[in-house]
Amino acid sequence: MRVSGIVLAAGEGRRMGGPKALLRIGGESFLARISALLAAAGAEPVVAVLGCEAARVRADAGIPPGVVVVENPGWRDGMLGSIWRGLDAVEAEGSQAALIHPVDHPLVEPETIARVADALRAGSRVAVPSFSGRRGHPGGFAEAAWPALRTASPARGARGVLADHPEWIVHVDGGPGCIAGIDTPADYARLVP
Image (cartoon, rainbow, N blue to C red; front, side):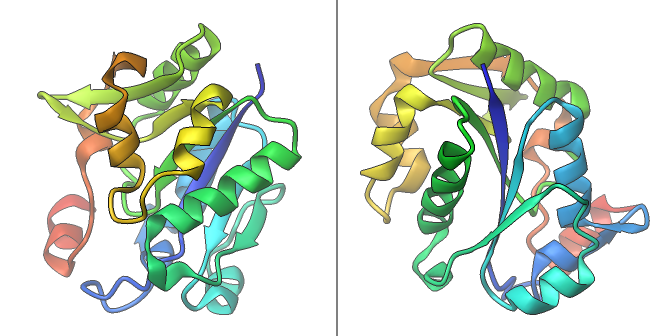
């Protein structure tokens, strides 16, 4: 099974003061780090979906070679449109599953990503990591779940698909990084060394 990665990096980062794709961690951008983590877990290709300030993100994020970059011109309409753009890209590459990961969760552990990918390869329709009773990222969606994502309500997004189809979900063990979202300068100061 070909599992691809989709990094959702189209938002404006209003609370952060700019695109979170460009925030730095360990000498690299959030976007570069997540792209590399997904690729290291065997995701191929990795697709980065850009939107707000796309030209600046392309120029300054240090996007690794081989990452497919697509733009979501409707990024203001919410994350679901970026998921659709990413699915279009990985489907065109012949993928059968996708690891969907928001750019503001750069602390996810490689083992967590590998467990989600392994669950998809083992036949799960949807696989998600959990830590301390909370669902985290990346969310893994096999091709059989893509029609539900493509017809989801923008107001409910991918969470609506999970809520409507709990029987599809396989939970895998995740590390604390799978739930560590960085939305504000205070989050960044607290979580990024």
